[in-house]
Image (cartoon, rainbow, N blue to C red):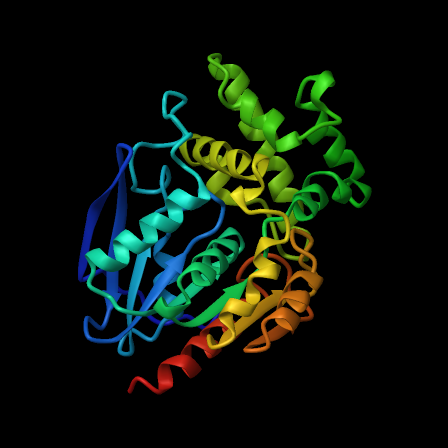
Length: 320
């Protein structure tokens, strides 16, 4: 069980017009005069749930959460097939973060990111190191073609029956190509039945990868057809383009974080992102420390969340 701080409610929230017809939902929690921190949720498309607030000591931190374009309480909803995804890319998200920082009159902030949020956080920090005080990442990914090939193809060697179903859900002519792109095309189909079948197949594969530990089970969020479609459309859209990062970009740019302390928390049993990803990143970023949790997989369970909270407590200690 993760040692979480008590539940809290936002002291401020709003919708920020970031252009292109997008309104991004944000909220601020904790101490209005506290140490600024930004939460970068995963997915892409998961949204910033209230559970993120509880990683932070509310007496110390001014925590900012936002739902990335197209998901959560931001509009328009990417799950709506009529929503154009051409203005929902990594460069757009990075620009949104800067607009939000300026809107909230924050000079510098700590970043907390998980899974896709770790790649987004690295991308933001490498472009704006002067705006980042510290970085805490877990379930670390760098959104490379090799990582996406691992998660959509190579893991079929471990889960052959589930992967056959995952692969066979796309047309035969596309099964040897870019599977996220093939799914993205199905999820844009005018036929609702086609879209629903693709969303279910994609999320079933996601469940296979993150529920590999004893006691783990399917993600209950995927039972919600609205969440399922939004998540599937966004994650396939981003993975089809490798997150709009150049191959190896985040590793190559890690030297820009030389003056930014970091903690990389990762499960040794994480099938979605092998542990060599944060390990190699730490070699390129000496100011970051890796914490590998032996019994943990992908996500905040099995000791990951505790390590994240400990890191945030350490970084927050100097603010008191």
